[in-house]
Length: 230
Image (cartoon, rainbow, N blue to C red):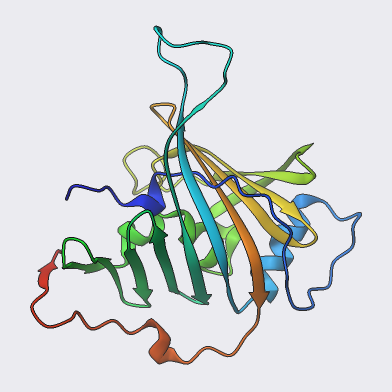
């Protein structure tokens, strides 16, 4: 596939203010507690996203410009716990990642191709699943409060060891951090073993809205190529 799965490999840096429904929190609460409350109390939500992939400058590039943006996308997201979400990339191309509770579906409009695979490991590796997946965040991560940066309280998510995983856990990231503000996740920063950085920021979030289950149903259009992976 000529484009990689953008949800798992890019960064969001839009820091616009949020519009959201009531969510009880105190400004004095730590980032970790804000994150726990968000995961515990948000059953459904939708909003906007922007995502980018960053890399360090190469040896022949200026070293004083910081990380270089190599890819950027934006679109809409919807989620319904447990296990349903839509990550709808709209610019610069159209691509949807859909989790319907049982399978993960990648729809690429330009390729006219839909790829179906069991949720399981493929779902666990996406940033969307980290924020919008199960409500038992503490079961899978140690939540460690970090610094205040860019008007956010940052929380490090340290994966707990999985004895059945090859490297002790199932995620491809060496560092996962969430920036919390006003009781909502404002940024998700991911770093993998190769130093690639992924930052996710969300905008105009609306919490606990009514979402029919049919919202997460996807039927490929007539004539589309359909791939089913195990």
